[in-house]
Image (cartoon, rainbow, N blue to C red; front, side):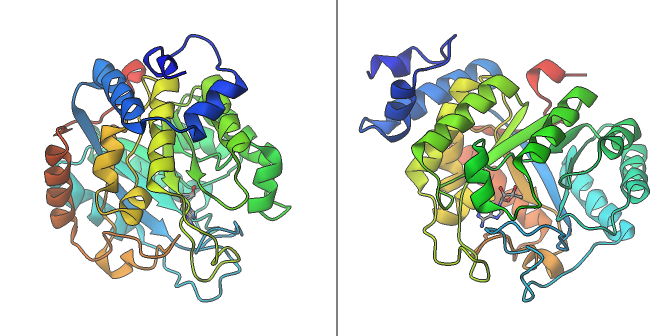
Length: 346
Ligand code: 5AD
């Protein structure tokens, strides 16, 4: 079976038994990580793309059972950045060398179609050499179209789990799996570089669910895939759950690289939260993107999806320096530029 690792990426779907072995079998994981790193180097060399993350609102109309900013969490501190504050984050980020700005937030009703359209236009006008990534959740197709026309380049919407029955255990009935998937299909059809992704070790997740994630990625072919361990948040129904493990998360990062050799795969903050060198290890297991926080330090701690989140105290300038050091120590270098998907270069 270990020959299987050397045969990846495969030009066929793997069997259930093969997936099961790769995901939960007992074998030398380092071989898998090395294989994923080799494949990543074929397409992206040792470049690591850096993104400036701006967490624009912690208000959310959704009630995902795992998430600290779910609407039922009355203890969550809520904030919303003004347009001026967002522009100030971009200005600082641009100075520091960022050429992608990721606007991420809870599903905040204050963010009307026009409000988002205006901020996207504003950023693209000021920084035509930058990419804008939106991560604002599920919206009508028309919103996605308008924002794309306004200049948004990419959209992140993790599928969270590709198994409908598992999705239903993580979300209230009004948040449907079918709608999540419809949004993802719309984004891709419209032309966004589209990001899917899932949590590893979320409550009720079994190996069958992770196999479904891999098969979904193979079929949907997203440009980006965000993968992080589930980490409990103390004010959610899953506060007593156990976090996803480092090994399991790295395994899924590596398998994602071997399923989608060209993908942009971030080494996530959640991975850095469960292990001091989590992000470095993620890069060595096939990830090729890191996100650095540009949100104002005053609100950083309030964007609290899970407990013990790292990087909530440093100013943006310190964050990027720390990130560059870590990327270099892992044997890679931070690349300047937008860092587009290899098949979506402009
Ligand atoms: N642990 C890890 N990741 C989480 N997310 C939300 N809550 C948690 C948690 N408790 C992830 C989801 C979401 C992204 C913005 O953050 O996958 O899509």
